Length: 133
Image 1 (cartoon, rainbow, N blue to C red):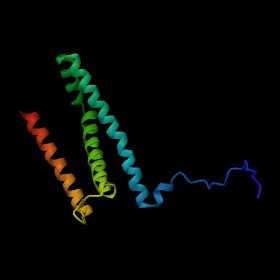
Image 2 (image 1 turned 180 degrees about the horizontal axis):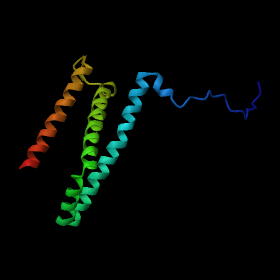
Image 3 (image 1 turned 60 degrees about the horizontal axis):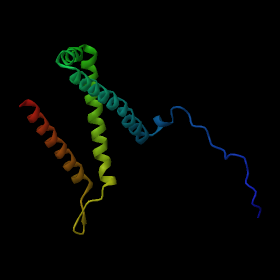
Image 4 (image 1 turned 180 degrees about the vertical axis):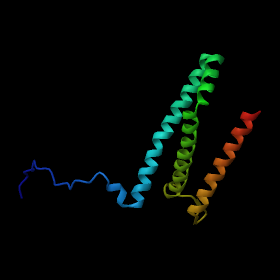
């Protein structure tokens, strides 16, 4: 047997641009990946709010008025839907990566999902209560 290494690359069959449309699991994966774009945009919008808040009351009030424009209202609705979908898919994925064992029994995946949603709801309620005071 020789030690000669070939410089030829192995053949890779080209994929069509719509490869992900042929399988529902791939479509869901791509949809979840697309929600990351809206999460980033929403985070940038919140960063913009913080910079306006640091700049002073007048600048922050101008930012608030700007957020009432129809474009930003639609942006917030789409962002909310994207983040809820992103959270839902993340909570469904978490039990596959987290192994929780109580004694000798593994906690069922559905219970982990429900606990994560409950924690999310409690944290959301606490934030709302703190902000409304």
